Image (cartoon, rainbow, N blue to C red):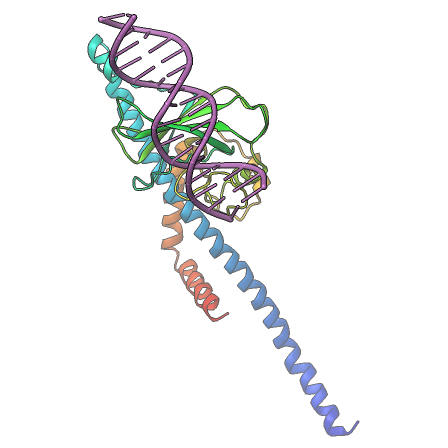
Length: 254
DNA sequence: CGGGTTTGACCCGCGC
DNA sequence: GCGCGGGTCAAACCCG
C-alpha cells in the first residue's frame, strides 16, 4: 500500500465514520418521529370518532328525557316512551348507508327483514353464526327520529367468545375501528358501538398492555378536557410544531 | 360450490 | 273468528 492510499484510508476513517454515526442517529430520530406522526394520525381518527359518538349520546339522552317528561300522560306515554334497555345499543352510521350493519365483534347471518308499522326503515333480523347452536339473535333498525342512528336489540347470551381479531382491536383501543376485512365480520369503518366509544388519548407511545392496566373509571369524563389540554399544549409549542413539520417534510422525501 | 342475502309466504300471538 | 303486525322460514338468487 502506497503512502497516498494510506492517507486516503485514514482520511476516510476520520471523516466518514462520524458522518455515518450521525446518519444513523438521524435515521433513528426520523423513525421515532414517523412513529409519533402515525400515532398522532391514529389518535386524530379516534378523537373524531369519539366526538361523533358523544353527539349521538347527547341525542339519546335528550330523547330519554323527552320520553320521561310525558309520563303523566298515559296515552302519550304509550306512544312516545323510549325504552333504553341494557340489551340495546345505539350506533351512529352514515344515513346514506342502508346496510344496517352493527360491529360488535360477532359474526351474524341475516335471516329476515321486515318493514314495521311505526318505522319506515326496515328492521333486519340476524342470528349469530360464529358458533353452531349459538342462541343469540339481534334486531337492527334505524331510529325514526334520527336516521343516522341505528338501534340494535340483542336477545340471548353467546355460548362462545367474540372473534379474535375484534378482541385484539378492542384491546388496542388507541386504534380507530379499521376496516381490514380479514374476516367476514361486519366491520365497516363508519360505525362503532357505544361501549367502545371511549378512546384514551395517549401520546406517550405506550404499549396496549400498559394502556390496559390503567384504571378505566373516569376516563370518559376527563378525556375531553385532557384532549383539549394536550392539543393546546402541543399546538402552542413551537419546537413541537417545528419537529412535526420536519418529520412531515422528511417523510415526503423518503 | 358453499355460504350469505333477499324476499314473499307462512306462523302465531294479541286485541277487538 | 278475524284482522293485524311482528317474527321466522325457505326457495331463489348472488357472490367470491
